[in-house]
Length: 187
Image 1: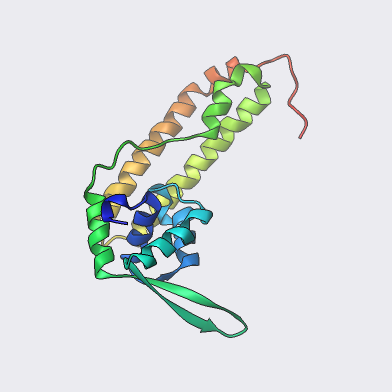
Image 2: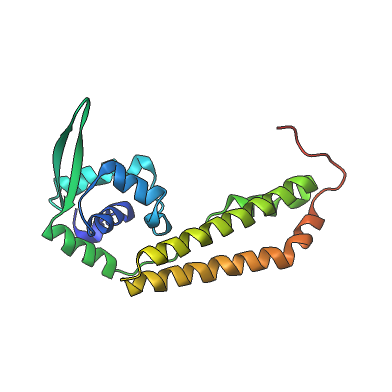
């Protein structure tokens, strides 16, 4: 696997390891739930195969650490070859951002759904956006030594704030599209 063939998940693993050693679990957690979740859609099932390929190609090393009463854990570290591959992969055209939203699917079918379902979907989306904004603020405070992180979190806050503003300004318009003649579906 050459650097130009690195998958987005492999590139993400190298990016996480660029900052220091990590276990597969730590990489998984950072890429799915942590600060790296904004960059690449990485599922739990894609991290370990990517790490295995990276180790086979010499981009990372892996060592086992014994743990009392538990299975040994694998700790990964990026190699110099891995650093070069990361820089090469990041130097390629990034392509378009991918955006998928279950909320937008609900909005698309607002005319088929009870008003309460649409209202709840909007409220949940607003809550999710506020939670993400708070998460970005925490990231920025914790990474104050890296000005690029400030730029990234500012960009993210701008996008999420615009989404929140749009929802607030157009909430009633979407709710008005919902069906008024059917009750909310049973849970």
